[in-house]
Image (cartoon, rainbow, N blue to C red):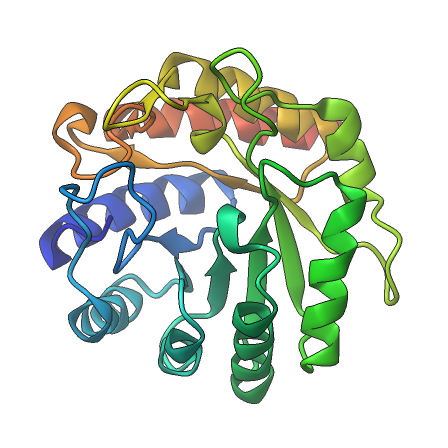
Length: 255
């Protein structure tokens, strides 16, 4: 969650500097509205208008691209005016109106769209989302794996399926794939706030890098326990440099 402009700048600066030192590209991610919370009492964020103002400031200050998620078709056009990559949440990855609005807005502004694979979707079914975006005019697409089915009280990361997702047969070639290391550690259904195993996120980051994914999604916070969203899965900001360095070494070894 974009808790404040100051916190966004603090986290963004630290991760940007670590990535620059290691030769890794960096996209700043935060949410202006957490519309899919377990409880109606959960914090939501600054909202569209103020959130986009903060994104514009963060982009200019850090000199990096940014991405955020949308939950309603009406948000696509204003978000595309500011951010470089529009994210479609996992639970909404089949929503035609949302995909078409995002695709049209992205195409009009030269942006991209990242679709998170629903926990209920097979890799092959994500071809439908890619085709909907293409028909809306957007072929600059990325797909994100974030764990599948709830199974035994946790999300399961299917690396056979990850390979299938990276080889998704669609016109124009398979889209690049991002792996969401922190949301994949969620333990759904543990109360009003989803639980998690953030201690396993570095393992998933290293494994997915070795598997050949094109990007990683990692949430971090100076004090995860005080985070207003996803506090049970975020990594401490102080640990990011070490984790990114190990990822960079794995990536280099594969080159």
